[in-house]
Image 1 (cartoon, helix red, strand yellow):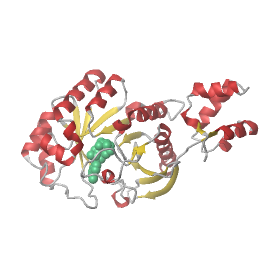
Image 2: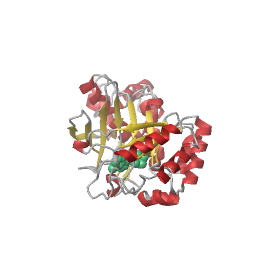
Image 3: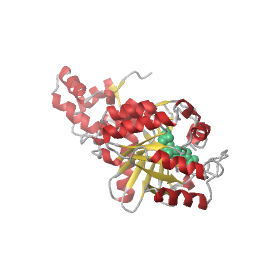
Image 4: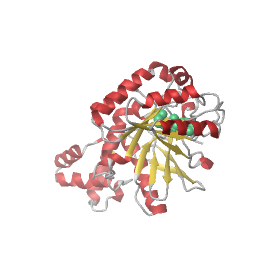
Length: 344
Ligand code: SAH
């Protein structure tokens, strides 16, 4: 078995120290660090400004557990889905979503998911493990390359809306974002990154305490506990009152508006009481609502509500001065849309 250490668990300082301990200059550590992160090298052989002997020495001591894009599918609307193979053979998916002016990467944070949302295909997969920071980073780097290749510009936005619950893999997600935003990584502004959570109050407060600069989205789907805990059973342990308090805490510390993701389903939340509950929830902190189109999953008992119900949501939210956007699905033909990621 290969017991060599993954070189990307080392900080830049540790890498510099490694070279000093091995009789080289600390500066060599900077060069290698740049290859590993900024240039996203897959192998030591790629590091062309490093001598052959040094590359061999690195090879003898370390591995680079780089992800490999296993299959790539392109949708008729330009959406690209990558099935990504991890070093232990497990697969996760990430998606590139192009619009006229920008490209967005939708990345995974776990293999499978810790949670049990009834309407989400990923929930039917067993949670296998958390992704490491470099595995999250690599997904973004791969999509950045594809964005340059197909759309001639760098990746502009990142959403953590792929597989998994990012706040259940808190430390690794934050470490990955550090690298993504760092000039030594991809140099993408935190303001262009959105972490989407199904709503884990304790971890939302921790985000606020950690003074993060990225955007927060919460998959709300209902402002009524009894309904929410039916469609998102884990939320029984996190009542809306606790969620509300955590969001108030978040807003007080960050002054950053929260986005609520919300799907309207036939017979579940397509009624006036549900709309009123959403309006009430929206008064707690400055926010906006993204109404997401439902993407049917194979054995789903869920159906997108009728146009009229969605229009009711829009007009009542607007009447209450709440910002509302309707999000059309992208990449449906390749199972790349929200909630459809299940390694098909
Ligand atoms: N666990 C995180 C991130 C992954 S889900 C979260 O819950 O936010 C990303 C978004 O897709 C969430 O808003 C989720 O509610 C939504 N989603 C899940 N299944 C869906 C489906 N079948 N159709 C449309 N959106 C879905």
